[in-house]
Length: 483
Ligand code: GLN
Image (cartoon, rainbow, N blue to C red):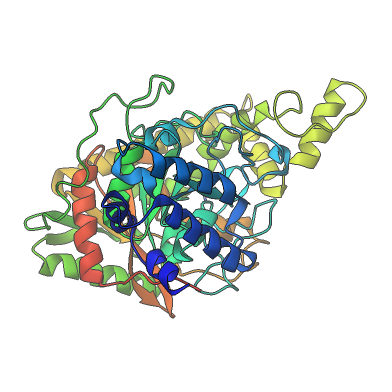
């Protein structure tokens, strides 16, 4: 076991290098991850569907191959259960897709490699709606730092799996913070790339104008490597950007000398816990000591971002979830007549939060209310995009907390949807603007990890990752496997 925990202690790029050098096999890596899942996942519940055999088979084929595969392909990967995986059930954390097996792999996985060595499909809030992974039909995931607390959400399974060493890295998805906030609460790195940077083909849609797939990793270098693996234009996703994929690793150690960094005033007020603000401020000061020019910046409409997001995202999801009707995918509850069958299927198949969002969204889009809600929210979205544009005229990177608090206790917010939505105040502005944003572990407050968020302009991930790499160094936070 000592050897395995040694292996589990590596970052993904270290593991990739060792596999490339022939010092370790992919099979040994897969065995170590499987053993760790076996050891801790009854407590953590990071996985809806672990795939130990599939991991071993694919790792075996990787090892037997001709070595012409990409550097990262030997490193086992955790995949959020919202990404379609051929022949492996994909539930989206919902009962309605309990037995749904996709016919193809999501493009992000196809880009990663011919046959990703997958540890399993990770737990999530139903259809990615939530900030705690308590809205899963498969039970909540627990935070490896404190099993009485939530891991954040909706990619809580992916975050917890990485924090618990049940894998070296994971894919999550971020519509309004779902990669960044759980990364923050679990003490790992979470990157939401620019909207359109990674294909959404095979990602089961929540908010189509917001959804982005992103890396969840132990350090910034691993995020750069995993983004390299999944990014790219895809003709099968009309919103995927036809922009060349740069080398995300080349600039990484370039430092922040002369970089202009703005601390976002609106995201540093009393809504944010004092301990979280303190850690954010320390990281900003660290960047200044490392040569950055640090100042204050305003995103005046950030105050309205949450309201706009909670109109736009439910509107889009109410339309996207219409396809789950008992006819084409997953669950069907038989009944007299097709309408009764739809009704019963959706009644039994969806959980409370999914139903709440469907109702909110349908209302916001309904005739007579469209202008008052949806059109208004779109105008606010434009204002927020303009705020970012103005901010980037003066600053290269913006900095704020990722979430307003550290991980909270299981059950603390389940009775109060608004309190849960408030978890997203720092994350949703970048989502609405479509700009890239990364959360790095900045330190501890109350003995629990605090995430610090860095944001930059569209398609400037190389610079963002370089700033994040320096931020991670000045923060001096060391990844340590929990529990
Ligand atoms: N917590 C937010 C929500 O519930 C964001 C979710 C996400 O990014 N998928 O909508």
